[in-house]
Image (tube, rainbow, N blue to C red):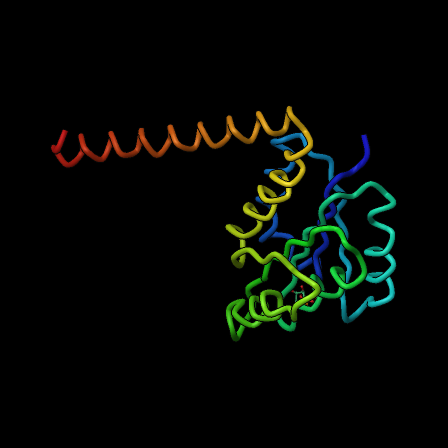
Length: 168
Ligand code: RP5
């Protein structure tokens, strides 16, 4: 089976924050490619990778980058595939710089931006899965089961809270 999702990070230093994305894709059995490609340090590779992604069968591209985070925008400029951006937190602006770089794309070239760091990484993977689930019945069922399981966990936590506080 060929990869449907591409995950690109601007630097290997971004990897620890992205663990949840890879875990989530694996949990759902979604094949992925993963690359370190920098919009600034390897600009030609970034353009070539984005241009060739659709023909390789990639359906969604996830881009993680920090600081002046142009990666997602540059990738989006070279493909019509949906691009999801994950801002990486770095000092001194804790990811707010990367968030604005990704979310503030000018009209015409969208980057769907999730929150910074590990929560964003997990949600980026779930968003990619939701896109694939539009045309994949098995994945659609898996995603619905995941949501149901998540709901049950919160309900169980609520029941526990009621007991702990003597309110039940
Ligand atoms: C960005 O610059 C990367 O995505 C990373 O978050 C940040 C710092 O990169 P390194 O200096 O750690 O390689 O391109």
